[in-house]
Image 1 (cartoon, one colour):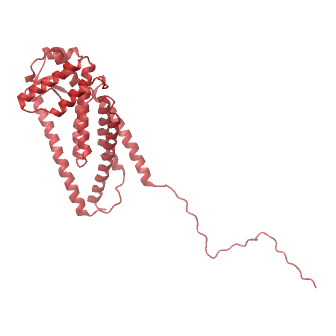
Image 2 (cartoon, one colour; image 1 turned 180 degrees about the vertical axis):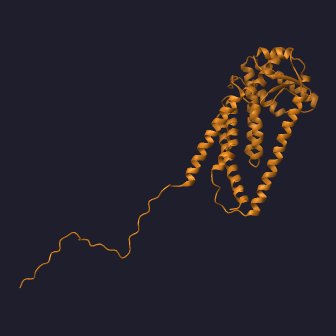
Image 3 (cartoon, helix red, strand yellow; image 1 turned 135 degrees about the vertical axis):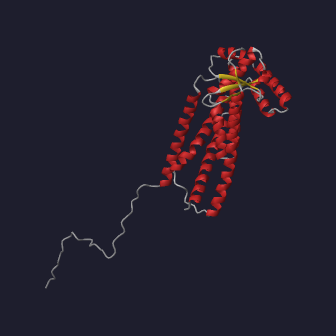
Length: 327
């Protein structure tokens, strides 16, 4: 088997394994629709992390023994590589743009925003930037909350809600997981579940952060009104707003029957480590089971065929009796 054919078969098995994981996540997400958004976000976070470990664990398995023409293998690998490189380039461009925004932002060292952050007992850097429409969490190892300058200085309750929302993303390491989801989409771009999985993770993370704001004491009506006012201001400034996502968030906020979960006080690195450990364990077990099933029985007993031309006497141990004839 040529290298191109082996690589194509490995990619095909990787895509099938990823589709199985993401398909299972869709089923679990639907079964957990009555659970909190934090729970459903956890389902997709684990699925994304598990799919991210598949390229490494699949290397331990032999390539399927299928005949693939070299020309066809080269063409298909080229198509996959083109899509993966394009999406990977978009991901790197987004990272570079975020770094540019952070470099151009102005640190907030005192004032009402710092006072509100101190009341939440959080240690994170705040910066003002003029090129964003709404507050956002940026950075990886050194997270920074970016505040748009057009937002000004809202009331204390609104500042507390904004910071609590972003701190919920920080506590659950949503920024890191979303970056990983974008990278996973680049690898599994031919699978529609990779696109919808990233979208579901992003939506669940936003609703889970909203739930954390409500659990912290903000009333649902005031928080929903704050989101609508922010979206209206964004529409006036930029002429666009994500109406579908805003509507889903407002409906979830005003739904009093939904289960909600507060922020879990833990380090973001610990959250990522727990997810990575669980994903590696599940992927290793699945790979070991698949390798064992492909190997087949380790030993077999083969009956020795009878030797031709070799016959045994039935009564070999019986004494020979010679009967004398009577005269």
